[in-house]
Amino acid sequence: MKISFTSRQYISLASVVFLLAVWKILAMHFDSDFILPPPGKTLITTLSLFTDSHFLVIVGSTVLRGLLGFVISCILGLGLGILAGISPHFKAFLRPILVITRSTPVIALILLALIWLTPGSVPVFIATLTMFPFICTNVMDGIKSVDPDLTVMATFYRISRGRIVREVYIPAILPFIISGASSAMGIGWRAVITGEVLSQPRYGIGTVMQGAQTFLNVDAVIAWTILAVLISFGFEKAIRWCERKLITWRS
Image (cartoon, rainbow, N blue to C red; front, side):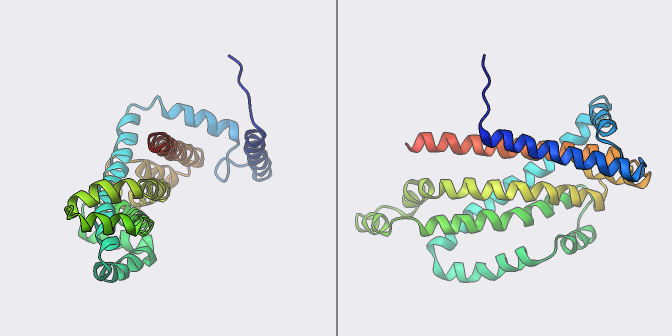
């Protein structure tokens, strides 16, 4: 099977090679694994993570927290976003809440959550508050894109509000939901791991990263970071795959 590459893929590959070269040069400059280990050693450490007896539990715990926060955000964002898009009064009520949620520093939310919640639920809480505004705002924007003539006609023929939402609004806002989910997922993973670093649940990527940092295992910190990036990239690809399927279905 012949594998072909586009010019953009070659440019992306060149960017990765450039970053690795800069990393190698900086590692040679500092000449200390306690500051910045070389890429080769970090790669070995990354591969060794898969042999850890608790690897699946650690990664699975973080992924589960991220997915739980994502699902809660989707349910709240979809429900409240549709209500706000349909009702101007509810939109006016919801807007200050969205502004406050987006503007509050994540670290402040984590510090409060550490007081209110158990260590394992802090990352879920932070992920929900971080992802919810993206999804809700996109759903509200999607409602705006609905052709008003369709809703007027549906109302004229006395079609129920639930059926209008199900058959008019939902199909129209699906692309906006996918876009909001992609943005939310990207920032949500960072929030989950940050919450784990500070709340220190028994298992989690953030927990082991904090432990590695305590003992100056910089290569382990970078290795877990690389793994977290790969997980985030994988979920983003999954969302984009759903988006392509959606486009095919709509066509």
